[in-house]
Image (cartoon, rainbow, N blue to C red; front, side, top):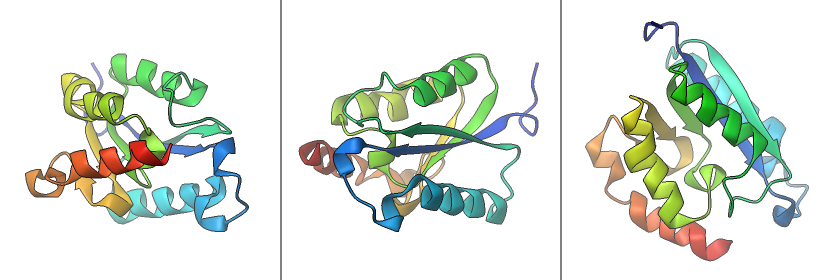
Length: 139
């Protein structure tokens, strides 16, 4: 059995070809920097990147995401962090199911930095459904 301080902190990055931008704020490199700094500042153990470069957030059939889910189901992940909710996914229903059902089923905490979402804090999650809905309309 893996103890909580041995589990990975999954740092998930996604950039869609649909974003069609060279803007640094949307780049994988920038997401990695933000996530790595956040994990270090909060002393989250064993940070590990999962990356989907060039994949739409409308589908969850992305290789990096699927590997992260497999590792989660194997009990290897304790925390999943994204830059914002839209990096996890743009389908409001499916994104909500992962955050509210799948992650808790495996004891995984989820954090979306820029959206102030942290499943360990009920206050931060009150607006999450509205943010997910907004992200779904952008896809």
